[in-house]
Amino acid sequence: MKRGTTIERSYDRRDIPCVVIRKKRGKLTLDEIEDTLRYAGQQWNGHYAILLNCSEATLGGNGCTELLDEPPGDEVCLYDLADTENCPVCAAALPPVKYCPTCGNSWADPAQNIETLLVAMKQEAERSIRNPDSLPASRRAWYWSHIGSIDLARQLGLITEERRRELYTQMKALMPEAEHDIENGGVQT
Image (cartoon, rainbow, N blue to C red; front, side, top):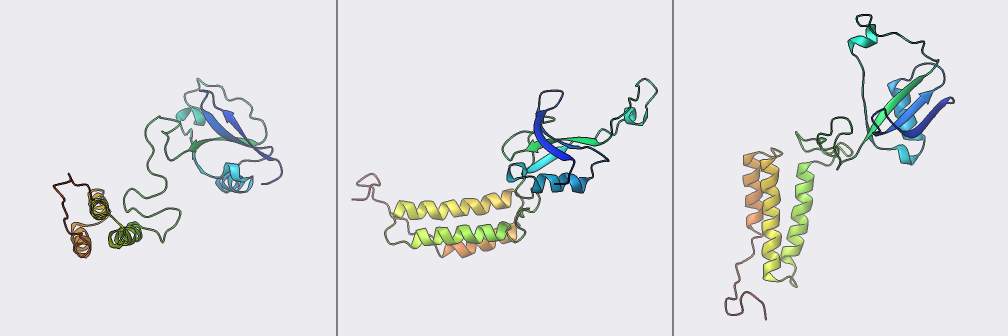
């Protein structure tokens, strides 16, 4: 963090929690804001939103607003964005921060995408299905759980219908035999 730059938690004029970065002299650049958040301490790492006021009033408008002498330096108010919360400005739901809603790729780890996640889930399902100590009901639950994850990926548009069929075909070999024990109400003795 550069000398003359400070960062603190505060509240905006509507009492919404925010993070305020101040610079004693000169204007803050986007790079300086990012560097301050990255290197001022781990508690500042995260995702933030900045509101930009580009209204007519900032240009002088129609003369109804008086331009005050601005003190030297600059100040920016940032709003912390959490994965599970609503937007701090408009209160609408935020888009997913970890994965792209269009392609399903991880923004934090570009090597992790929907295909790598499906492969990892298939490996876990296969391990549980082939486990000799697993109950038949557990094997069926693992199988259908993975089929459900494939269907969800298709419904979200992260995989094509053709790819969904390919994954179904791969899973067909793992389908556990239907074992029913009607005499005991499905309970294994």
